[in-house]
Image (cartoon, rainbow, N blue to C red; front, top):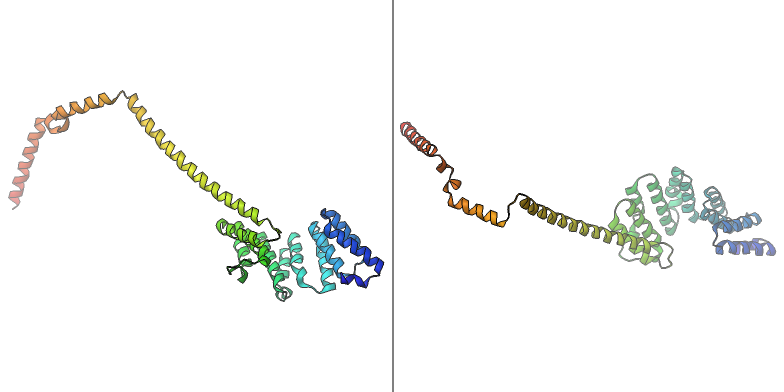
Amino acid sequence: MAELRTLPSDLASVVARLLVATSVTEDINQAYQYAKKARGLAARVGVVRETCAIAAYQAGDWTAALAEFRAARRLTGRASYLPLMADCERALGRLDRALELVTGPDAQAADHATRIELRIVESGIRRDQGLLDAAVVALQGPELTGGRIRPEYARLYYAYADALLAAGREDEAREWFGRAATADVDDDTDAAERYEELDDFSFDDLGADVGDDDESHEDDEDLDDDDDEDLVDEGLDDNDLDAEVHERAEDPKAEDPKAEDPKAEDQGTEDDADDHRSGAEGR
């Protein structure tokens, strides 16, 4: 903390202890209180304002966090605060201001790591606007096209997977959550859990489809059983059916309707003769 050297030694020691307490305290609200005490003692030191800004951001005090980031940027000149400043504007519902920060000239001049963080924030802004496909596009770049998985891109992989999932592209999202989990060597994200959830979801869908097929097969069997029951209800057993077939085979009238009506056969013969005569006259 070289910046604290501008302070008297006793004051620098107190401020340093407060900054350390802010970073190691798990209770985010208590950490924020330590940061505000440090700011009260050394408000013109960039690292103090930065620490206070981050503590306010983690505590969800977006207005205070934005003010502290602006102060830290004035004191240090660092562009690395831009993504967090834009995210504060987004959290406050000021999406237009947030977009100005992520697409403005200062953002374009920032270093590569900062520009990646700005793309992540821009993707979130597009999702807030309901532009899910634009949220995916905002994250795309050369970092996502190579086959090599790099730890420094873990947050980008994770954000891309999350955007794909929001856009309804589950298969691609599962792939990128897997890449994010591989790249996240420090376990900063829950990429591994998200990947397993999507993997389990896919197997559950497959199981549901198999279950539907089984139910359909059971329904077919039930229909067959109902048909058999209808035959029984009509009083037709196997012996009755055999007897009816035998009776039809012995009775020629059952097979030839003309045999039942001799007049019909005679009429048919006369009709054939008339047709023949008409054809002869025509020739």
